[in-house]
Image 1 (tube, helix red, strand yellow):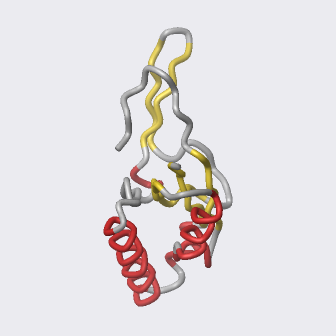
Image 2 (tube, helix red, strand yellow):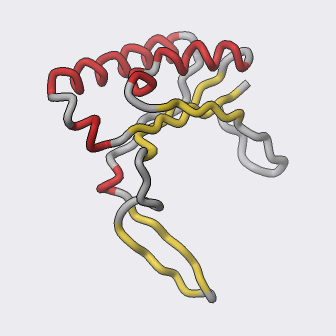
Length: 121
C-alpha cells in the first residue's frame, strides 16, 4: 500500500539547530531513503524550502501567481516521502525514523487510487 509521509516543521527553528545538526539529519534522511529504495519502498524525493514556493490560484477564470508558501503557519511542509509498504503499521515505523519527526510532525496519508489516473510505480 502506498503512503505519503508529509514532514512538517518550523523552518526557522530548523535553521537554528545549526549546520552540524542539519547535516546529520540530512544524512539520516538520505540513508533512510536508500534503505527504503533497496527494498523497493521509496518512490519520491524531498522538497526545497518554502522560500522557493510559488502558488497558483484561478479565480474568475484568471490565473493568479504568487511567491511563497500557501499559508503562513507555525509549521511548514518541509518535505515528503512517498513509500510503498505492507500496511499502516509499517508506514508508522518508517515515519518514526524520519529525522523531521524529532523537531516537527510526520503526517501519514494513504495514497488514493483513482480510476483513470496513470499508475504510480
